[in-house]
Length: 71
Image (cartoon, rainbow, N blue to C red; front, side, top):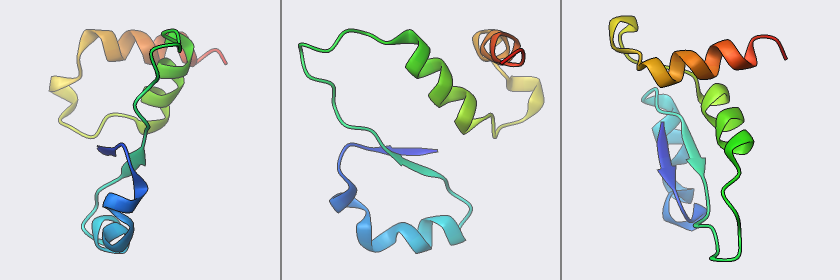
């Protein structure tokens, strides 16, 4: 998963990125007034999934999966 803060940075490369097997997300830099939204990050990481070797899945990611499987 590639993460960018501005769609304009990748607009012309999106078809290429997808064709090469990459996922991408545009996630703006939060303002100082925004609080940390743990539920939002859990949902985002769950949506992205894990794309590495299963032997390398971090414990914290497995916990996210376990927490969201009931939803």
